[in-house]
Image (tube, rainbow, N blue to C red):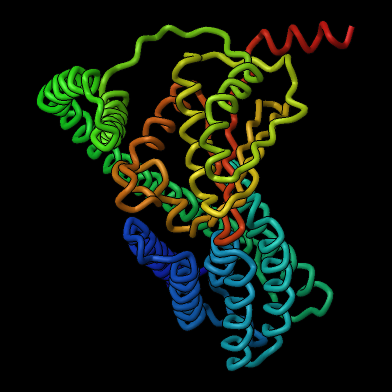
Length: 430
């Protein structure tokens, strides 16, 4: 292969890397709530399309109208990261532009593109869930469909002649291109996620400092006010004034609850960990929230909860996290409904808390757990869920949220199983 041909392929790689940087720059706009999933996929499609067109425009011309370039790298990566909708859109971009060149190479393009798009679309969801090493393996296996299918087609139809050195250099550059592309995408995406976490951490530090000042400046005077009001209330006989006092006490309790949420988040927790029996904590939370549920005409269902499931953590803090999620679910059902709690045992313990309330949009779900974000408007501070996320994170737990507008919301909490769970399960089967 001549130096000019190698340079042409390296120029192809440059086009591909520039398109990745553009996609990831736009992906960084996800920090802005106005940036939607649809816009993200559209940016992948446009950027990959431009990369494909440039690769084919600056391709190496071989006998029998065959074009030698790296168009399949952006086609594959666009399909894997963007999904079937992006993949098939890029598939038609490749075919339409290749058709304008003519030659037998169009049919080779059709075969290779079909394989990559169909298989890539099928594996797209799995691809996004695996590690960096797994993504690279997926990419290498799929991208080498191209030289294999091309080689078979050329041998069958005797359409073009390739030297051994051309095949070797082709494989090396394709391998280098797909590995470096995936590595570049994943590293920049991780940096974007770290940036998001840094922003959240800075907000948390600010809340923590603010909470300390609230404890000193607000809580102490509020306690004094409540104490003197209680003394006045004890000697009050006028029923009208008694109602006024009750309203004042109720509002002071609300203020104290808000301060307590700030303080719970701000102060460091002691590492007093122990075994938590999940059934006990779930049933306790249900009992505590029954009055609120009856007031909102909500039925709490917590049936068939197994006894043997244990996890490690602080029982008091876990109880608080559980109550925060359940309370939000009850309050989301202003016209009544059902709050369902289920415990399932897989590799981890899965605690599901589902309501039939008004639900949330994808943008709202993405912001749950962030400081000062609340779906309750002026009635919420967002600190309850922030505290909940911090508690569960310290227990090595994970929260997955599924929600649809006007259908309801499900919180799926994944918790590690403790040795007590395994021992009791073994004992019950013997």
